[in-house]
Image 1: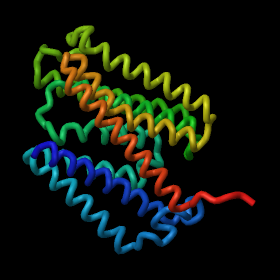
Image 2 (image 1 turned 90 degrees about the vertical axis):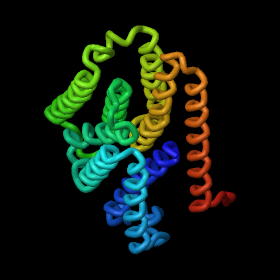
Image 3 (image 1 turned 180 degrees about the vertical axis):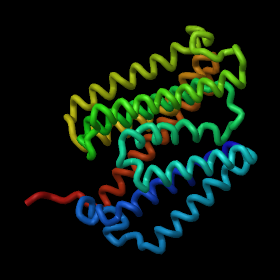
Image 4 (image 1 turned 30 degrees about the horizontal axis):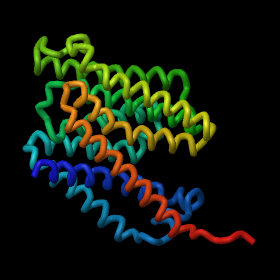
Amino acid sequence: LLLGAAALGAVGLVSFGATLNDSLDATRDQSLNPLRPIPSGQVSERATGALLGSSLLLGLLGSVAFGTAGTLVAIGVAVCILALTTGVRFVPAAGLPLLAMVYAAHMFVVYPEMRFVWPAVLVLTHSFAAAAVAHAVGGKAPRISKRAWTSAVLAWAVLVGILIALGRSRTGDDRAWLGDLGLTMTMAPAVAAAVFAVVVVRKVGQVGRGPRAAEVVARCAALWRPVYGSAWLAGIGAWLPAVALTLFALFGFAGASTAREAFGLIERPVAFRR
């Protein structure tokens, strides 16, 4: 029941963010991406509004299974998504850390009483770094100035400090600091992070800088979040759950890639050149 509720809440919030983003970008996509569902007329404004409202309701409904605290966290995540898509994303100094906070905060929906906060710290750092790299290599506008980079990094550091302080207040001295975890527990997540960095450098080197590189970084970053979950499980010796989560992530990524290619063939069918 809890797994189903978590899946419902996750799908609802992701769908809410994606639909809201496409809805707000509909005018710009008419010139830049005219084949997207809303600009091309495949999805009407009424259907967009219905999907937007139902997605938010499903996301909040899934969080109800985790009590009042879980529901309040889900509402906070939805508010952050709303702020991010309506304008904060165009201010990199605030948009990059806010995006990272969304990914870290949603982990507290299913477990608001979380005491072992280092997985959330890792996801926060991973999401911030991936978004920053994607923005830089993709040449996205607006360009980030040195002052904006400094502000973004300081905001990330403050968020990390808040998470660590939260974990310390809930656990005392027990596993409150990274050095208290031991080499065995931290090795697997550290290796996963290092492999992610190598993969990103290699992929960006293959495709070169530009929008495609930013998309590649975003895809790898999305795939790596469940990999970190498997790494933490492996670090504590829970090998069966670690393997199960890894397989689930791989099947999910393969399914998403297949669906993406299938829809691409529908929009642009294969044909012979003349």
